[in-house]
Length: 350
Image 1 (cartoon, one colour):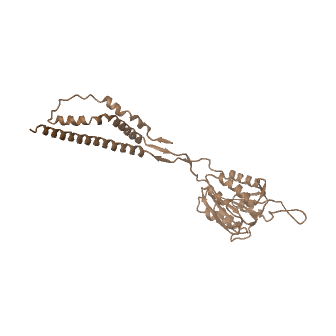
Image 2 (tube, rainbow, N blue to C red; image 1 turned 180 degrees about the vertical axis):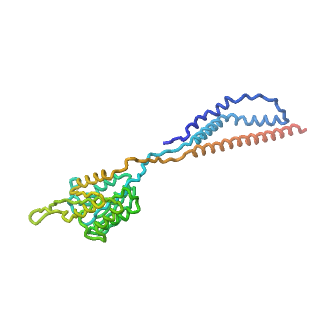
Image 3 (spheres, rainbow, N blue to C red; image 1 turned 45 degrees about the horizontal axis):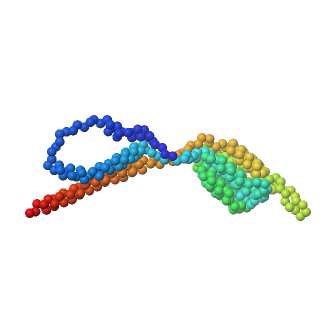
């Protein structure tokens, strides 16, 4: 939409008309006799057509005046409101993508899917809700690496999570390295509201740093860690004669995950299904609330130069029209004078 910074400028539009009405009457002074009056009178007669077009010049002058007033009112284009990101939490998501995350013991939309597919769906929705937070993504298996640094771009974080293939970081689980990498990335951030949410379905069986040592470093730096143990407790697998029930989460190190959360004032939660995982991340929204206040920004672009440019162009055109009419009248007068002198010379010949 278009707004005017100084809309009161439009009150001066009638000023020229008021000036014409209120100016004092001009008294006719005694005429000044000049010897070449007849020549000037002929020039004025030749410019009669120009005077007949004077109404068009007045219209142009009116348009120029309106353009100048519009430019003086400072018009500007104001765009739609854009929500600015808030300085919320620095929140890192550490997701296990080891080989065990390919186990099909989760149900999503009435279909059995892998654990990683369920995590992508639930954590992706969690990312979309964290408007105002800086989010980062750590993926870990045999090694831990930073997939997305802390950013306000939630769409990129979710997109990279959904595109992550299973086992790209190795088949084992380095929980300690994932926590250590998160501590390293959060050290240069303000000490308030630094959070790590770690999800795994196994036990730390590789890495340079033990999970408890990394958790102590995080606690010293004021980083809070929420741990989530993921995986079903029961799963039927086909046998030679009949199906048998197994525990696909037998290797989940619940004790270590509980200690990690306790050392950093976090909470450990267990998710045995996709629904439970959704409830856990919904609960994390309550434990780490999002900033309610939201600032908005509306892009603005000044437009005063458009009416000002139009006024200048019309002024040049009007001035050029006056000069052109004057020179045309002068040429015609000279031609008429020359033809009159020639005829007079012919008449005077004996």
